[in-house]
Length: 114
Length: 113
Image 1 (cartoon, each protein chain N blue to C red):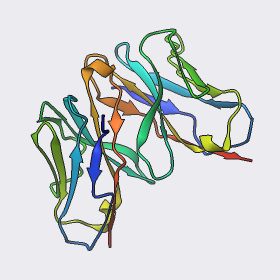
Image 2 (image 1 turned 45 degrees about the vertical axis):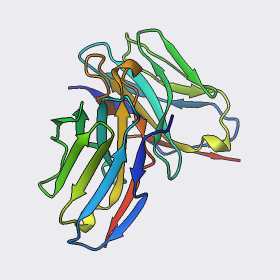
Image 3 (image 1 turned 180 degrees about the horizontal axis):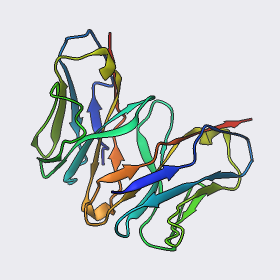
Image 4 (image 1 turned 30 degrees about the horizontal axis):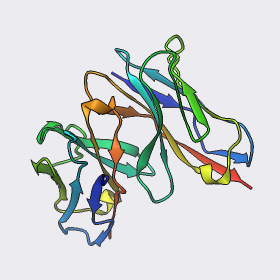
């Protein structure tokens, strides 16, 4: 079975541009999480969904960030407009209640905002 | 709320040395406990887990025992290899909130030949 798939793996953009990160969770997993990882702040949970519904978005840094999950196999994280401080690795993860809470992570999307 | 406290790093060891990375937790219920490993340039992946008190998780020579009395889940390996160099995260997940995990800050391990 394919793991969690994220795209793009690397994105370099200029300040003010819109960035869209994409995630395909493992089939059958009904939880999806977006994390951000930086050297300064470590691993931060931004938002998570259950059955395509956002459950907790308290980690989303500000209104420039938005996330959607239009169906069970696809989610996006959008930053508009982007700023240099958004530079980080963004991870998507999915899980199923059958896995006792284990998270399955994608390879991450490394974002650099110039 | 829940919290996970990990031994601060970085940790540098010589090959074949003994490894311990301490992890303690605070939780309202009886969570499942995990160790994840992150190799350079990759996402986190599960290393081992334990779902109830006194359970021992093990994988690739690593072990950790769920100690309810000390609220700990320390990671150990008897003889580390250069290929074990990575960042290690301790985490917990409440059983009634599948998947929403609380992570420690991560401990960077470097093993020198």
